[in-house]
Each structure stands twice: as structure tokens, then as C-alpha cells.
Length: 338
Image 1 (tube, rainbow, N blue to C red):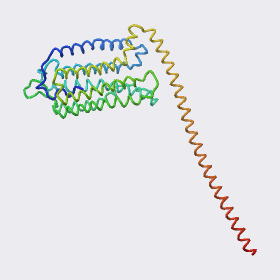
Image 2 (tube, rainbow, N blue to C red):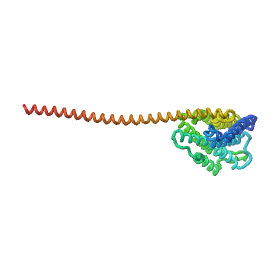
Image 3 (cartoon, rainbow, N blue to C red):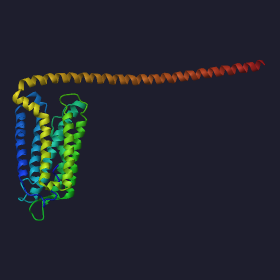
Image 4 (cartoon, rainbow, N blue to C red):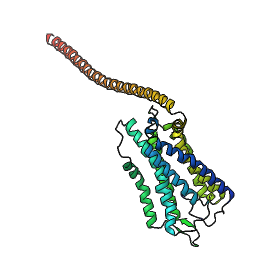
């Protein structure tokens, strides 16, 4: 959401107290965020955590953290990027914010959703290695970052006091981020009818509405140069922090709290809900199979009825022809008698 934030930087408002407040609040928010990921890594054998796909969750959190740090630098909360050459500009604007930041954060969630889709909708086994689908999803952003590095899409400005992104590269960048988000929504939408505690469609739907609103509002800020104002750049940073923190805590807050304060009781309740949900899913599968059987039998009966109707029509036509032939024969006989 802040990927266009540095295409014009010479008129950025200087650092203010609000920048310090925003960075401090985001930094404070990162402390429990990182701690919760450590808790999940330390409790991999705990069944309610294991089903959260911890590897992807932690990788997504790492990408979100990198995205946040890059956003703080790019939005100039610490002032212009004065040190380093154009290579450093490319690292912050493209690689850290894009490929290793936003794209890694969201594509880990996309791979998780794709895994749920394979298991719950397609009834396939989960893939053994999640790095391959993650790499495939990362390819567009990696290709874009490589191309941007070759053509120096982000470089030192004329006065060599800051970094600047070429405008049309920034526009393509924003569209690429939107494409990843649409993939996220599509995968979530495919899970909307699945009735199981594994399904996270409700969480994703609410977060998706929030994220889309913040994304569009961010584009308005960037198009009107609102990002060069202190309030504007603070809003962009808070938007990124809200997206990263929401999707982690909405999915994992309950289980992290349970591990710390109510581990045994939560596992018992979770197991009961798991068994009841599995039983419900089995019943639903049986009902769906029965419905499919009835549909197939109904189709066969309709075909049989159509055949019988065809035969009935043929029989009626034969009777009509026989009656007509009999009438003609009688008429001919009466003429002969006459």
C-alpha cells in the first residue's frame, strides 16, 4: 500500500513528533507479534497449533515484519534515504518492500488457503513441500524486482539526497499488489461453503474488506501527494501494520492465549469440537452423495419416461393409421357392393 510512496520525494514534510509516535506504536505492536510466533514455534506438537500450518504462518509473519520495516523507511519516518547508492534504493523500494515483504507475507497466506482448498474442496492430499507453490506465486514479483533492478526503476534523485521511483514502475507495482490480493480473495471465496473449524473464510472476508478499503484510500493519498504530508505517511504505515497484525491475531490469538494460560482444557474442548465437526462433515458428505445418487436416478427415470412417451406416441399413430386403413377398406367394400 505504500509502494508508490517515493515517486516524488523532494517535497516531503520534515520529520515530526507524530512520526516518532507512529514508529513507537508500531514497534510496541511488533513485540507481542514476534513473541506469539516464537510461542507457536516452541509448541509445534500441540495439536491446535499444528493445524495452523506453523511454517507458513511464521514465514508470513517474517514477510509482514520486513514489509513493516521497509514501509517505515520508505515513508521517510526517519527522514530521507541519504546513505548508499541506487542499489540501496532498489533494495528498500522493490526487494524488501515487495518480494521479501508484501509478496512473501500474502503468498504464504495464499499457499495456506490453497492447501485448505485441496483438502476440503477437492478432497486431495495436502502437498508435501509448500516451498514449490510459494515460489510459483512469488515468481511475478521476483521477475518484476529483477526487471526493476536491471532498468534502475528506483534511483538516487538529481540532488542525490533521496531515492525516487520511476512513476510508471510504481503504477505497475501497485497493480501487481492488487493482483496478489485478488488471488487471496478468490481462494478464500472457494472455501465459503466449507463447514469446518479449519475454514477461515469469515476472518478473511472481514479482513479483505478492511484491506481493500485501506488500499483504495492509500491510492487516493498517493495520487494527491498526501503521502508527502506527515499525516498521510503515518496513515500509510498504520494501514500496513493493521493488515499484518490483523491477519495474524485474528487467526492465532485464541490458540496462543490457550497455550500460555489454558493449555490442557483448551486441547480437550478443541478435540471435542474437532470430533463433532468431523462427524458433521461426514454426514454432509453422505447427504451430498445421496443427493447425487437421487439426481442420477431422477435423470435415468426422465429418460425412461421420454422413451415410453415416444413409444406411446408411436402406438397411437399406428392405431390411427389402422383405424384410417379400416375405414378406407370399408368404404371400398361398400363401393364394390354397389
